[in-house]
Each structure stands twice: as C-alpha cells, then as structure tokens.
Image (cartoon, rainbow, N blue to C red; front, side, top):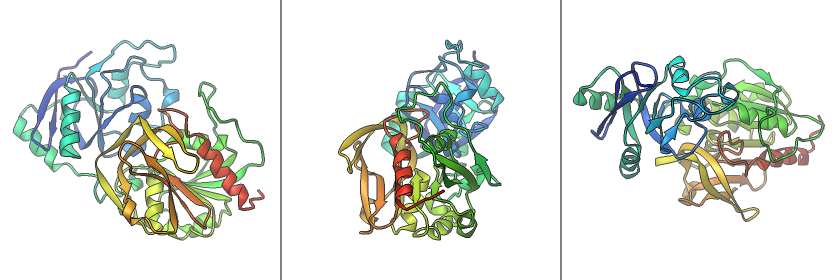
Length: 378
C-alpha cells in the first residue's frame, strides 16, 4: 500500500511524518480541510482546488475506489492530498481502480498516517496556512522553509489556469446513476452562456437538466463576445483563487449587468458581488465540505449544502441594491444574494452537489424561471 515515507510541513513550523500513497515528489499550496465523508474523487478533480492541498477530516478514505464517471474534470486539480488512513482495497462494483493507483497516475503527491485531527485544529486556530507535502525531503527545517516559500492564493488569478481556452457546447445531462431530485425541464431549451472559471461537470449537467442549451466560454471572454451569442441568460461558474484578482472577468461581467439575466455560483457569486459594489475577503480557514447548513431567507427553509471556498463577501459592504437571500448558519456569512431590480442572483455554495446533498438543486430551476420571466422566446 505504501511506497515509503512522506512528510507534511506547515508554515507554522509543524512537521508530520507519514507514508506516501501517491506520486513521488513535492507539491504545496494553501492547506484546506474538507469535512465530507465521501466524494474524494469529485473533490480532487474540482478545479476550485487548484493551488490548494486538501486534507480530509474523515478517517478512512478510498474504501470505494475511483469511478471515472464521478470525475468533475478531465484531470485532478488539487496540489496534494492528506489523509489519516487509505483503504487500499476498494469495495464497490462501480470502482475502476484503487485510489492510490489513480493518485499516482494523476501525479498527486499524497500522504497517509498523519494525525489529521491535530492538523485540522492547527488550521482552525492559526488560520490559512501554506504547506508542502514531500516524499523526497526529510529535513524539517528545509521542509518548513519550502512551505513558507509556497505561493498563497491571495492575489492570484487562478481562473485563467483552470479555464477552457476556446468556447464549446455542452449537451450532457445527468448520468443514469445520478439521484437527482428535480425533474428534467420540458422544452423550450433556453440559450445560456456559461463562464468557465473552473466549472465542474455537474454544474453543466445541472444546467442541461434544467432546460438550457449550454455554451461554455473561457474565463476572460469579453462581454461583447457573449452578448453577440444572443443568450437568454449567463451563468458564472465556480473556480479557484482570489476573486478580486480575476480582473478581466470582473470587467466582462460588469458589461453584462442590466443586459441579460445572470446566475452565479461560488467564485461567480464573488465576482458578481464585486461588480455590484461589494467587497470580498479571505476567510480564516474557509468552508470545505458537504454538510454546511444554509438558510434560504426567501423561503425560510434550511438546506444542507456542499461548499468549497476560501473567500467570502463582506456583509457590511453589500450595497442597498442587493438583498442577502442566503446565510451560512455556521458563521452567519453571506451565502447568497439577489439584485432588487435586475434579474440577477447568486449563491456561495454548490447546488450541483457532486459530492454532497441534493437539497439545493432547485436553484437551477429558479434560474430557468427567472430567465423565462424576462421574456426569453428561444
């Protein structure tokens, strides 16, 4: 199961020794802990994790192997992987291969056998920390120095790294195995242009399921190019890094407001908030998991949600033109908003799940209804 020793070092000076269960080498970035009990494959292939090292708080990982059907992108995007214990023998009829084999194929440096609870406590107490995972360097001072030399996500436009380079159509809906709760929308199909800041596949599937004809465009596509496609609506996807650094996208979205209905998720929500006059900030340790309670103020309903973000919108900076529609009940941060006069809304979390509960899948239907309410005739 193990190929030898591995080490995890934090910029705080803490060093942990464990066993290598992935590729050989060194990788680093911002360390984030994810509280989901399942979904490690979707997490590792989520482009929103670019620039970050993922630690799973659940103790055993890999017990159902890797099923390629669950991949959220064509490759893994997390920089490295930290777990307590790897289950080397997958127990699922859906598994294509064991997790450790997949990690090596994806060139993901991974470490097991470390005290993930202790590491999580350090991050919770000290805030966002850079780190390094290595299979080649055992010198503690050297490792800590390398951790401190890692580039944090602050100020980085990582969307340009994970985004597509050319527009393309997306027509695939949910696979037969996906347990969706919202029924597939009837015709007519509505044209939507989806900005790819690091879009997960299940977001695009959810848009198709909700009755949209989807065209995906690169993160830095100008507003004029999008409007020339004559879309009924525009979708702003999730993605990694600092929203304030994605300046070309901020400029593009600014040119779309007031001209077309807009729905944003995660990074898309943050970019939209900046365009509309709010500010964002880096959270102490972010929200990463599949069990975060969010209250929808428009219905009074509490939904359990999937989340993955290290930045959030400053509540005090939200202008009067916007209404806070969703609140994270763990820390009262802004989890969603809508414009009071324009057909625009967004959420900080992931209604497409994958992994996570399906409570919020209805938001894609809400987007369709908003577009139809604006008189789309496609």
